[in-house]
Amino acid sequence: MKTHDLVVLARKLNAPEETIEHCKKLTVVYLETRYPDTNIAKEIKEEIENLKDSAKEILKWTKKNL
Image (cartoon, rainbow, N blue to C red; front, side, top):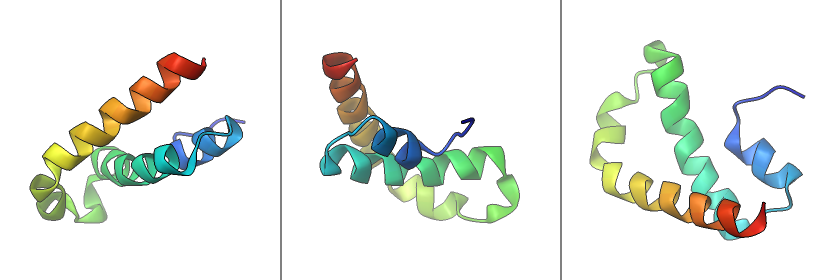
């Protein structure tokens, strides 16, 4: 399976729900950078710090479990 959807990947790895929630946030950002016509860039700028925290939590879980 080939996908860039972090939620799909997290579920496939049986990640805890908290990690999946972080993945949901970051997948939206990924879609904006991959497909710039999605028009959510303004909303993303307001949540940058939260997204960085989500990325840190995902990396922490990944390093611990893989």
